[in-house]
Amino acid sequence: MDVAVIGGGAFGTSIAFHLARDTDLSVRVIERFGVSEGTTWHSAGMVGQLRSKDPIMQVIRHSAALYASLEEGTPGLLDFRRVGSLRIATTPIRVAEMTEQVAQARALGIDAEMIAPDRIAEIVPTLDTDQILAACWIASDGYVDPEQLAVGLAQRAVELGAQISTGTTVTALTRTDEGHWVIETDGGTVTAAQVVLAGGMHTTVLARQAGAFVPLLCSRQQLIYSNPIDPEVAGYPTVREPDESMIMRASGDRLVVGSYVEDPEFDVVDDVPVTARYLFEPEFDRMIPAWDACVRRFPVLAEVGVDRVIKGPEGVTPDGEIIMAPAGPEGLWIAAGGSGHGIASAGGVGWVMSTWLATGTPPIDVTDFALDRFPASFETDPEAMLAETRLHEIGRYALVTE
Image 1 (cartoon, helix red, strand yellow):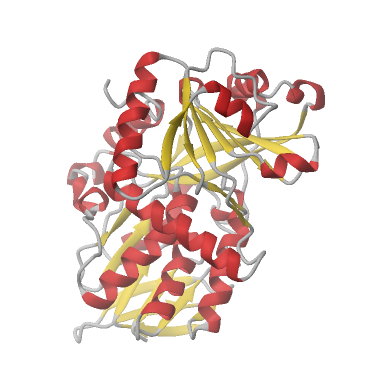
Image 2 (cartoon, helix red, strand yellow):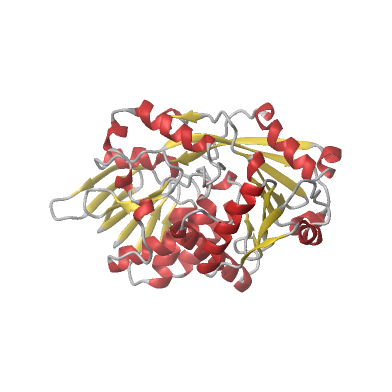
């Protein structure tokens, strides 16, 4: 086997798909549970290309194009809806920030534009535009069913020759003197020239087996699902209001509301139960500011109310950016740390990693995703790593100019 990918979430299945489609390398995915059953399945699923740095915009641009292409070719394969996105600005300084980001995005070929409140009202007549000065509109953005994304990519990967082993637990990971990797599992032994650890937040545990350190924590993230509204909401664009730390997308005839709260919760990954589809006990009170902000934009939510709240684990890095990098021992690679944009990034992660694995050279500048961007001291000073992670999470929507 040329490449073994450990982890069958959005990253792992995307890497397998791209390797099978675009290279001659053989690939096998090893997944402890079922495809997507780690942290992928409960993700928000928003695919938004506007970011503050070029490399991650290039990654997500690839994702958005890939998801749209696969969905057009086989409707329902990924359940991707290209409904567009609105990022709302309610202050002059936020408008200035978005204007700069839009110019940056357009230079990369992304169809971003700044629009006025009257245009916003045309796109979403039910959205209250009070106090909105402007918004960034990207027609090629959208949202995807996160579970179906991984399932669809896995399906295509297998059709193209990849192997996927589900219900298979990795028990040991070692490198031989001859330079091959031996992966011991409860279903037998797999030998591969290269190994990609794409196990979500549990990548840090897998890496430890191979003598590498990957700085990841578990962040407890919540989503609110409204009661049914109207089937028409499925066509609503995704909405972000950074000054309220609020995000919103549709899910069938409901709206889903998320947020980056002011007092984020983290766990050491080893303390999180290793079970399929694990969820924490939800806490609606922590989400009230985001819910209220969304109600102000979509008053119908006050009428229909809340159906349920889910609170799930998510792997995050100290700086909130993904890791795509070699990990020290030759032939060992990391693709993990979705940090709130794993679903948006997954398609691009597969593209970057497969190209890098096959040619030895990544297709874009990957400095922002390097493993060695983090200080080695984080391994022995977990409190410092936690403090850095908390600082970034709290400032997730801070103005770039601040």
